[in-house]
Length: 402
Image (cartoon, rainbow, N blue to C red; front, side):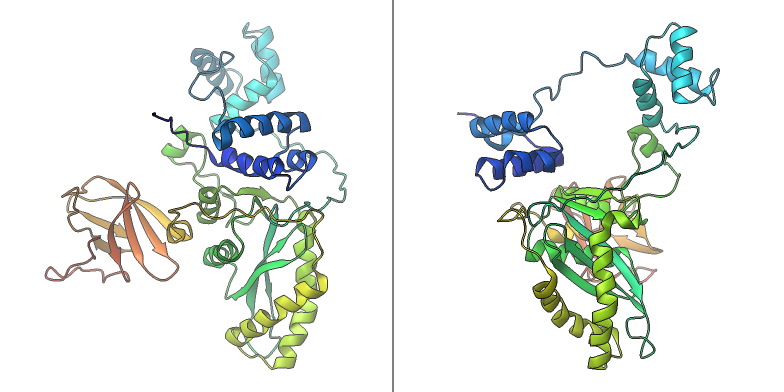
């Protein structure tokens, strides 16, 4: 009997994971509704679908079918033409009024806003109403939300250089899941952090971070491909989290991720004293002290979660963590089967299934352990133990055929 293969999106797979916990009684319907931002009634419907169809039941029923309420393309084109021409500079609501009253186009302000944003037309003026901050309750279960941050500080005082502490705190328990020192707050530091969490605990449901450029594109540059796609390319860290199906939540203020901010305050007090006591004078010596400090910190300050168990997911079968936690760049192969990156030339050897890769789009991965690997359609076609010199010797193979 033939079975239809259904591929779930990251959002649907995360939904299946949470619903599975609710079906198995690990969490309540109310807690699942909070985690998924759905109503308890909808979660009950999802539970029935999961019990009947398994994870495949989380796929949207309208997948592959166009919406009956979609705006016709010709209307979208007219709205964009008017928004950039006759009504250029009008705010979203004012433009909507003109479209309804002057142009005879019956359309809502939310639809106008969605059309404009999807084509890179931002709001004329940012409106920021006064905010009322309330205390946010902890997530009920370990692994539902992980807060991450970096703390640049003179950890060794005047005994050595300053460097950055990069770590992660579980929202439900306050437990420090992973922490390490890094010369600077950079991409490699966070890739190392998330890999440590995945290898030790599993994949969390969500990550809470600040709006550092490591997590969020803060530039206004859009390539032609991005404009056509209606979305900027993610950062290296965001791309890795998307591969794992982890929701990234960006905080609007330091207070929003107060648990890790308070933890770093404690670290800057207690850990700095422990470093002074141990006489640590280098980052390596400081890391040895940190490795002893974290278990003691968790024993003293971590709290029991409101809900037993955990929400960490095991990596799927065949998931290559080296491909997830790497620096990835897309390149076009030259006519001579070479790829240029970082001012160097990488020669791609003939493959078992394809003699030439000229004009092909490939991914160039820089792994955490120093390898440079080239992939074509997720198949590794070349590998280097380090970047070769700028001029490739004609008699020396530049890559290891795989």
